[in-house]
Image (cartoon, rainbow, N blue to C red):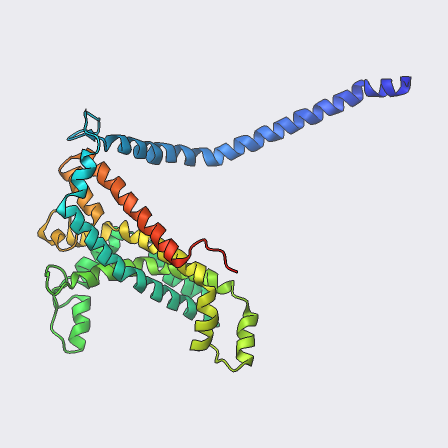
Length: 324
């Protein structure tokens, strides 16, 4: 008993355990400092540039705030009702719905087609992935100005009109005429060029998750490689979750359209009346008319519309539904 007592109270044993505890605390402190060193700046940026403006904008939407971002008179839901009842806001919702009807299915089809083409080639896959994904890194402002000034400028030497000239067709004023509405071609093509590469990457990831054994079994049963039978019965059904994600993300992105409309059609010119989405309308309300309370209320109304449409679309497509 004396021996065990001496061992338990031995300073060497006690000293070793104390050193271990200090070493663990030091490592934990280093890990914590490293974590906050990497995550802290991002969290600080989110708090300052995202969370605080959102909270302040929500508070501002219930006040009369003209020519100032400081709440003055409490007006309750008056800003919300005035925005909802504004015919121009209602027309902007119709405009963005038309834009979504065009851009969502076209982007889905093109991105799926590109993904299948890139996935089936035997060489330079990385090169083609990079080429098609590269426009995603391009600025929306720069791309919109290129589309307006060079590709679809409406002049005989413009790129699009040169293509028409090859086929013996007359030049077209792409931007500036309400009937026929050729400006939709400009708006849809620039957004398609900018985002199709991103969704192609999503489909490529989905294609690589499909077991190759399914295709081999189909080929044994007589299906042709790359034929409609394998696409309709294997490829597309197994890309269901990816397709739902592409549709949801694309629809949300369509409702957030601003740069192409603002830079191609303008914000205050007569061309803007041809097609003005909600964000351009709210931009004019908040920054041109300096009615920040109504602009903030319109922003939250738009967020609510996006959430509702996304939930409905996800419900109809079976998002989150368990598969038996």
